[in-house]
Length: 135
Image 1 (cartoon, rainbow, N blue to C red):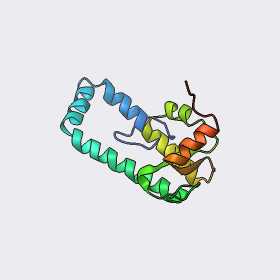
Image 2 (image 1 turned 180 degrees about the horizontal axis):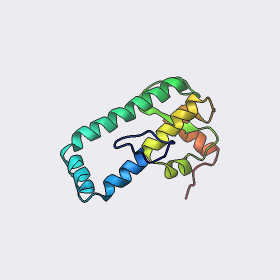
Image 3 (image 1 turned 90 degrees about the vertical axis):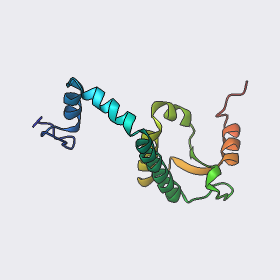
Image 4 (image 1 turned 180 degrees about the vertical axis):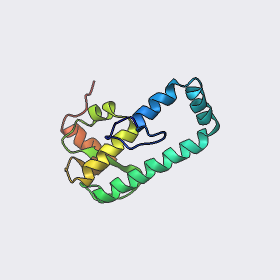
């Protein structure tokens, strides 16, 4: 046992972090991981895409499935908007998967930081709030 109780344990009695560190130090650890990813690239990508659509679906349902301003409900044009602005800074800070987890957690905790807007309403809001820089 590694003695760490903060994270779930994986194999050999080690937590996830300690197990990954040990695996990375083995001579073939990184090679094996790279080979696995090369052989299963399509399957991994499918799993990632499915995860993205599941999270997006859940966020849309929690936010009401329509634009907060005009009521437009075609999902192809709906976007998640930061109510107070500052979304660009947040997007730079996190990768897409982590960003979606963060947004979903915030929505589930009813923090009222995000809303669903159609693309037109989102751009109008950005322009009127001076959230975009025009040259």
